[in-house]
Image (tube, rainbow, N blue to C red):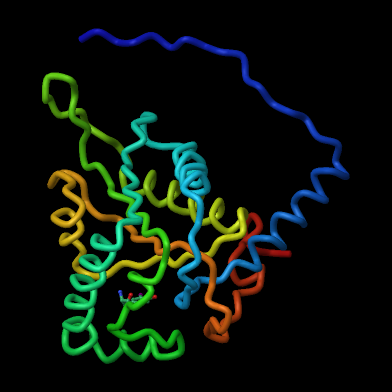
Length: 227
Ligand code: IYR
C-alpha cells in the first residue's frame, strides 16, 4: 500500500475583532432566519453564473476523507424539466394516494403540499444533488467514499444557504422514490438522487405555511443541562 503523505500547509485564518464577530453572528442568523422553503415560483430567468457559484459554494463542504461524494446536475432545458415533473408527479400521486400513512399525511397537512408539482416546470433551474456511493478511478476501479450521507447533507445545507444569501429561493424536494432521475438525467446507478432543488424567484403571490421555529432552549442543552 502506498500512502500519500500529509503535506501540511499554513492555515489562512482571518482573526476578527470581537465586536465584528458579534455583528456578523447576528446578521447571519437574521439572514438565515428569513429563509423559507418556497413552492410557488416565477418563470423569470436566473443567470447560470449564480447557479455555478451556489454549486461551488456547496462543494466547499467538508466531506469524509475529502472525497466530495456529490454530483450536482443543473437543469434548465424545458424538455428535461417537463420529464422530471411528469415522473415526479406520477410517484407523488401514488405516495399521496396510498403509500403514505395517515399519520404522515396528517403531519403534512399544515404544509399544504399535494402530489402536484407545477413548480418543476415553472422554475428556470432544477438542481439535483446525486450522492456518489463510490467514485470511479481512471482505470474504472471503485474508489470508496466515506460518510456519504453526512457529506451530502452538509453540502446541500451550504447550497441552500448560498441560494438564499444571493437572493434566490428554493425548496428541498424529495419525490419518492426518485430513481427516475438517474434515467432522465443519465447518471450511473452508483449515484443516488439525494435532494432535488427547484430554484428561482418566488412568484409575486407566493404563500408559505404559518410555521414557527423552535426556540433556542428547545434545541440546545448546555453542558449537563443544569442552568
Ligand atoms: N415528497 C412529498 C411529500 C413530502 C414529505 C415531507 I416529510 C415533507 O416535509 C414535504 C413533502 C412531496 O414533496 O410532496
